[in-house]
Length: 213
Image (tube, rainbow, N blue to C red; front, side, top):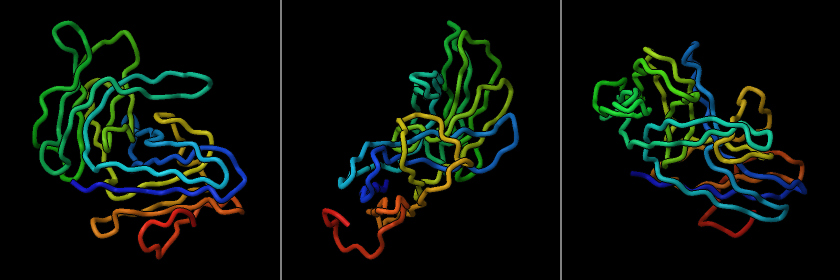
């Protein structure tokens, strides 16, 4: 399974975090997906940070809470999956009424991950979704008797700079300064820089991995 690496360089005078996220395909309600900050690290002016991850995908469920004014998702269960094979799972309550993902199997749409939400009543709001490299990328509110289909971008990510924490909800439609980055087995390492003009851009044509750009 491929592993990718992204180096982010802060050439601006701004303080903040580089955050990686994914843009979900549009879906009608009630299956509209929420994007969350997938990976995030702070970077002071004149410094760089590095992210690395595997392209392993999986199912997650958890809870969303507001902490310090941030809407943040915390995963409580992770089930490894394969978007081309074992890509369908049920979400329901066990014999004690506890929420759980179970019955992983084949049969979902090719290239996607599907959660069959069965009936259930829980004491707190449930959110379901998928992860890449064991970190959540999309979530959706639990809705009984609904099939939710998630399509991960295993070889692409989006980068933003600002005040973000891992798991924080990202309104992708409101973002204006982002950079999309594509990866492949022949180009597993990429670089993005925040310029002195505060613009994110991919740094092309790098040979090796120089310390700064």
